[in-house]
Image (tube, rainbow, N blue to C red):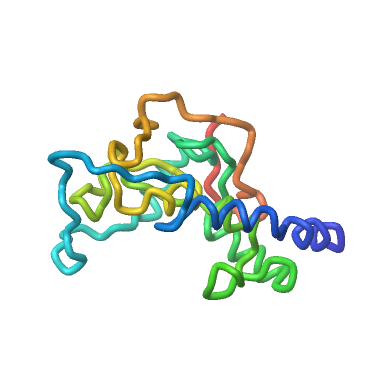
Amino acid sequence: MKKAYSLFSEANDEIVRQWLESVWGKRSEYVQYRFVEGALPIIEKSMRVEVRMPTLAEKITLHHRDGFNCRFCGIPVIRKEVRVYLHKLYPEAIPWGRKNIMQHAAFQALWAQYDHILPHARGGSNHLDNMVVTCAACNFGRMDFTLDEVGLQDPRFRTPCLTEWSGLEEVLPSNKRIELLS
């Protein structure tokens, strides 16, 4: 327990936080948005038809297809459920407050997201063919922009980065885990 506490505390690194803050959001110096003729407009939240977040069953299907690595950059990811469980065990070592600065830097960077290739805000559906597993930086860095608007290739045309990384699922009770088939 002391070793885990120590490692989690050490991973809450300011350099990781600075990198993450530099990548996501409208102020990122690294993500450049461009105007694309004919791009679908952003739909007001009140006018969006579908619920944005995938169901647990859809998340399981996405992880079986994509593994526990971001489809854009390949970084390992950890589901929210794993982070919440570990935060309860190690609240001081894995802080998770309401603001970014109050959240554990490494767990923030590895936070699994479920990104819509055609953004939900542009009318993209929750159909699994329109979704991929991503890290927080890639998801929040792109925001509501299309792949063309940020100059990214469609990650669905690349083979998923399927590695031995399990997303730390093994720390969860067996009835809460996503187990990938070998």
